[in-house]
Length: 450
Image (spheres, rainbow, N blue to C red):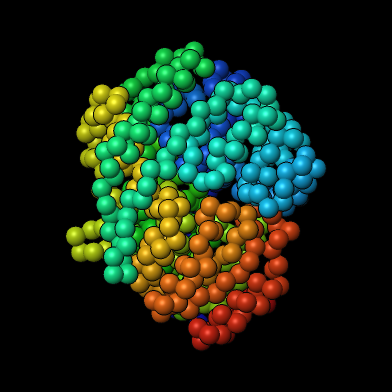
């Protein structure tokens, strides 16, 4: 069968790769350039360390660990090193890859450093069951690295009603609770680094955070278009910039540039998958060592347009007047951000506590409601759920999510695996499941490469 739509490579693809590599270079070489290194998660309130100066570089743990997982040989070395050190195999696989790299004294980007670049301090927030413990072990492995952890588990920002969901105000006491910790963190950072904290740099970083997360949601909104301008496998290489530096100028600028290109693709009818017949979404982290399963979908004329994970890990959303789920409205300029430290932090915290991917830590029904809305609004024909043994936090309640999606009328395929441990992914079995699922959607494998 012939292609239905025109396609072309993403013009910003090479720039996306260059920015990612530059991030890991900056972290590795920070000390030789007179800068500071810090470690923390992709969800960390990373605008705060930016108040210490323009030469403060981070290593966000989850995307870094995914980079290790993508490299099967290094990942196996890291996982086995963690196991030899006594860490259980059923722990978060990102954690085990990260710890293994420290134990082996290896960096995932050896072109920038042959050995593990130790951070000067650890700044982390805690909503996943593993977040704080992750870095407690890092401290044990590397010695007494100063560590500060912010508790952001203040309660849900959405509630379900009649099969849909709506946002509810973040209670004032919840905002004050996190802001108080942020104020303590700033004083702590000044003490452990010997640097003076600059509120104007924080203000700028908060605005860039708003820009990055709202713009990424706008990009994901465009995935409603038929044909989809992006496929999820490509989106993994694009959303990652927000997990690296969502409060950075470079990330906010890149996403605005990317939004312009994706809008242009939509206007010209450019498809990510020129044979698009049906549309699905996935869920949680993919098995990073086997991203080719997304290319296998394309052999049936199937495109995965995204997921709650790719949309909501970094993207910030709101319910619009017409009932649609769209990019969150942000201040028009940095001048609209309050100047006082406590006031700007309150606006920042109130914004960040709405993060979609934080909601389903509170109850599976909240995740189900968001997934059903994506399935409806993004014109999906089915859903693929990854029973991911590598991440307890994002996979908890996934069986309940499956039942709710089926109740809403969407065929659901499940497959088992692990985002960061390729030993727990069965490729032939997963392809067999895809074959059967595509058959239920009325598709044959007509576009296989000879």
